Amino acid sequence: MAELAALEDPKTRQANERRGDDHGVNLGRLRALAKRLGTQQDLARRLWETGDTAARLLAILICRPKAFGRDELDAMVRQARAPKVHDWLVNHVVKRSPHAEELRLSWSADPDPVVASAGWALTAERVAETPGGLDLAELLDVIEAEMKDAPDRLQWAMNHCLARIGIEHAGHRARAIDIGERLEVLKDYPTSPGCTSPFAPIWITEMVRRRHGE
Image 1 (cartoon, rainbow, N blue to C red):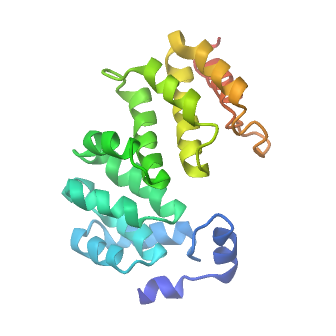
Image 2 (cartoon, one colour):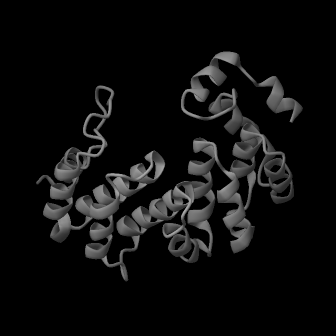
């Protein structure tokens, strides 16, 4: 914790806080510290329990994802309110856990929109990597009915899932693009030059063009 405090930079904190992340540690320096520490599950748990955002990010980098129990991961995602902690926890820990599918199903229907967004993030991953057993038409029904009015982080995750369906599954592509065009979610999202817009119709069309030359 003393090392993390020494890495604190006011300008970094100011930039991070605009995105809802209350820490001031450069992520490159955080990764360098994690590399020096190596995998340490007990230390990771102790760092997580501090509640400090930088400490929790470090915990994610040095933990052993498969060592966490299902209930432990459920509690952690409910505690992870900082967007970066939530994102890293889902992508670097939960996705590698043997409990990922069970949690995906329970989180997707959770009344807490931040928890539900974790379920949708896991669903987007399955759409792209292991779609067997998923009802893609039903997912599109839910997205069509609920995405427009969903809270920001849940809306973002549902939009990601919509784009993944359109990119990866040609049979559902036209409907995915149509849903995106009608709902107009993230249509005006500011996009840096050279980056692809998160607006689903643009995102789908561009990724299909890059991957398949269509």
